[in-house]
Amino acid sequence: MHLKGTIQSGAGKGAYFMQLGWVVRQCESKLGFTPFPGTLNVNIRDEDLPKLARFLKTAPVSLVPDDPGFCAARVQPVTAQGIPAGVVLPSDDVRIHEHRVLEIIAPCNLKEALAVADGDSIRVDTRSAGHEAALADLQLEIYEFAASAGALEGFVFERQGLEAAAVDNWIRNLSAQYRDLPPGTRETFQPALNRTLGRAIHSLAGRLGRDHPHVASLQRMVVGEAPTAADDFEVDKARKAARYGRRTP
Image (cartoon, rainbow, N blue to C red; front, side):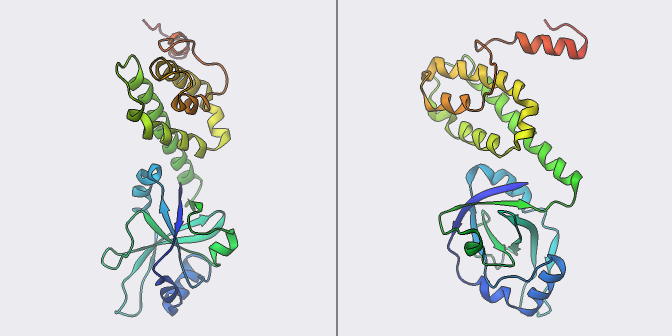
């Protein structure tokens, strides 16, 4: 699973916490690195908030204090632009940021190592427990993308009085999901996507105009042959009939 967000300034409290002896020792033993004294705060983008909800439930590492004056924290091992790191998830009673803001620890000053500053975008990837977990994450991303694309096609088909604002976020998020999928994965379903989005494009072009930005955004995700009309389902009908051994009406 991966998340993207924007770097923002923190409260400056991370440096003290990351230098505590019990924190350093447990980061070394459980995360595999000595933490830099400070955290990088990342505000997760809107389109990744559904994934963030799952991310927050899966942190497998706990930092347990040997001082009763401190609270335990969970940590999700991640990479930040390829650098091994961890996201610290403090308990709600001591959290100072909203849940969409991740506090990232690493063995180095991430801003210096990545040559980034406040306002820049950064990608955070979970360090999966293994191939099966990584495959499950990818399959879920494909399912969510396909469901969104299919729902968009149905929503815009023959819809009267369609306004661009009704699909602004929908198309923006769909484009972001498409870009985030590995190129090799996109190739496996590209022909089917061409048919789904091709029909949606015809529907939108008829109501918003062929030159509308939404039409252009969808067109950038079509690679190859596409349907010639919004109601052109003949290719899908033939494919399903051949695959499942029965005729479609």
